[in-house]
Each structure stands twice: as C-alpha cells, then as structure tokens.
Length: 249
Image (tube, rainbow, N blue to C red; front, side):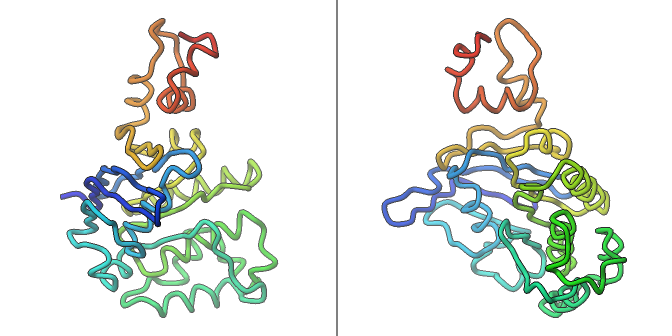
C-alpha cells in the first residue's frame, strides 16, 4: 500500500481549474519530489494531501484514509512546512518547538529535534535573530514536532545563499535517513536530482510525468543521444519545441 495515493484529482476555484487530472503515489520511506512551473497546481495538490482542501473529483488517500474526513488522524501523522511560514520575532527557538509539540497527541522530543536540525546551540535565540538558513532549519523541526510518518517541505531552499542551500539539503538527507517519508516541493532541479527517489511533474493542473530522475532524463533524451541533465529533461518535457530553439534537435 502506498502512503499517499492520488487518482484523477480535480480542483477548481470558481472558473479557474487549479487541478485537472493529478495522479501519483508515494511509497513508504521515499523522498518524492513535486516539480512544476509556478501556477502548475503544486500547492493545491499539497493542500489536498494535507486535508486543508477537498478535491472536487478524484481520490486522495493518506495512510489509507481520505484526509478531509480524518483531519485529526492526518494532522498527527503528516508534518507540513509552509513555504511562507513566519513566527513572532521575539519567540525563541525552544519556545516555538515546545508550543508546536502541544498541538499533537504523541509529539517528538524537542531536544532530539534540535539536535537533528543542528539548532541545539540556538535554543534560546529569538526567531528574528536567526539567519535565513537557521529559520529554514527551524521550519523543518516544526514540521517534525508531531513525530509524523510523512513530512511535506515546500520550497525549503528558496532565497538561501549557496551555503544555506547546501546545509538544508544535508538536513533533508538526515531526515530521510531516519526512515521518514518526505514529499519535497521544489523548483531546484539539482536538489531534486540529489535528494529524490522519484518525482512527479505537474503542468497546468495535470500530471505530465512520474518516475525516477534518471527515467525523466532517459525519456526526453535528444535523438542524437547527447547527454543532458535533469534540468534539460524537465524543460524538454514541458516545452518540446525548446529543443529546436536551442539547437538540440
């Protein structure tokens, strides 16, 4: 059984079709990447998984249940790091984790979380005094405060400097090594190639591809057989005409 399973999911907001046909599954223990351009429907897809949105059609299953009908069950088992999450500047790191731990039935140990994300020495530091990378580390810790079975990370490395991106990617690898299932929403193709066991590409509300990064590369390889990476494969999938304009056909 898959931990997460979406079949033919559709969702509209008025006249806007955010999701037209989204289908993919996430296995236990894998890092699964959700890729796609801005406005493709990634955030709507994640909200359907987390149970904060109910699809208009299709099926969503998380750990065997429909999320919006079992919100407490899903909330205790799915950690969700919001892309634009922010905390009061004066709230200390340890205080934030202690607070979030009270939201869950069986929370994680705060001291162990601080050690996992490398913030033990920042426990009494105010949120407003953290660097960008430290804030993202705290976001990871907050998503894990409920001791979840799956964690959803949305654009964790956006806006970080190269060292910050490297540090957060290493953190995701440590989280993966604990056996947690990770759903990683990202625009960073290098990040996806390094971290993800499989990826889904969503474009204009539809699933365009599901498979490993290598399978995406192989499926879009130029007829000449020339080598190309995940970024080229992704762009070729979304716009095959791009190949000719770049002289790669």
